[in-house]
View 1 (cartoon, rainbow, N blue to C red):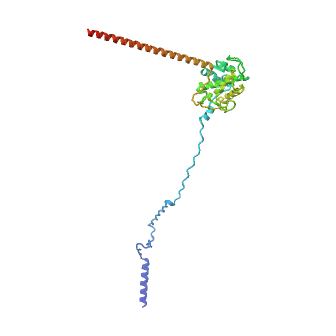
View 2: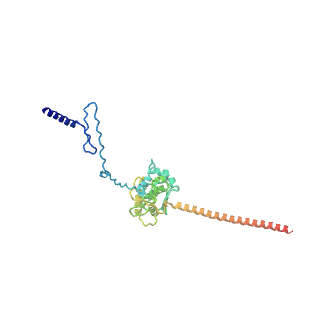
View 3: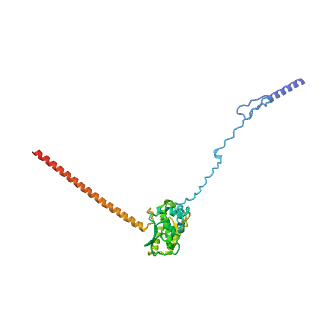
Length: 323
């Protein structure tokens, strides 16, 4: 009996050991995966594990920060034509125009360009006048100094005359004349004569108006302005754009509405121009009348000749036929 029990026990143990070591495949759909046997052989390397791809996040879950658009900055205002042109004019004081010619000083400019800008010289005053026929005559006269007063007599190329009104008027007349006749005298496209005075007795008036009143006053004519106020305004105009480098603010741009640029005129030049224009117009009228008369006479002669020839021919032909 003991032998039989021993045999049974051995059989049971062998069966149990066999079940534990046997590979049992799992059915499809089961939760447990089959265990892979471990590779005890060091010669054959194990396959590396392939990493799985990370899950792609949903677009809705992403938070994307979009940078805000910077606010535009205001550009500085561009200067207007008037602001640009304020310092582009040029004037000189009576001492500047009266300086001895040297280098590029105003006296040198006066002597170089006088004949071009003032071919008939410069005349100031009205009634009683001062006439300057050359640049040297101006150099000899300026600066004059003295009181601002009316002239007692007319003179040509005066020397030693002390009259500050005449000196200031002459200096501004030279600046306006160069500005009108020589483009390179100043950088501005506006005329110096059209600028308006910004303060004082002549506030709102143009430089051209001031020149007209100053010429009246210097010649001893009646004017609603005092000699001192005229002289003061002339002096400030001469000092406003010295050498064309800056502006003192006494003058400002005034563009004429009609587009015309007034120029400084002198009595002698006006009379000469009017006489020449009248003479030209008379010649044109006379010439036109003569030509028309000649044409009418020529036409009448031709017409008469034509009629006579035709009549004689026709008469001759008629007689011969009848015969």
